[in-house]
Length: 118
Image (cartoon, rainbow, N blue to C red; front, side, top):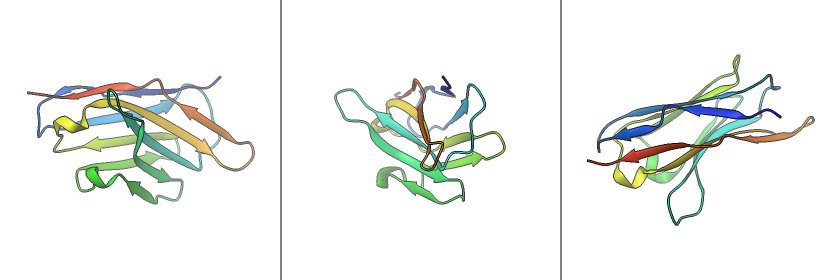
């Protein structure tokens, strides 16, 4: 079973930056879309950003202008550049890859912790 492997999380001060990466553990067919979600303690998981295979992006309103999602279609890898981080960005960040036409799939990573604190 293919899994997505995230990296790049950690502890950063407010105003700092982090870059998350996510790659599949094995070979997968090109996803229709890849994205990042996050879940803070006591809250529901929310969509942070998505990017289609054609490059169209979508962002959570609170991260617009601060976060940037990108992908490498050759490697089926997705990145999330996070700038001007705020304490409210603290959460476990999860990577997702989905294919909405056959053969369909919906893969998730195990999550990487991002903590923004002074």
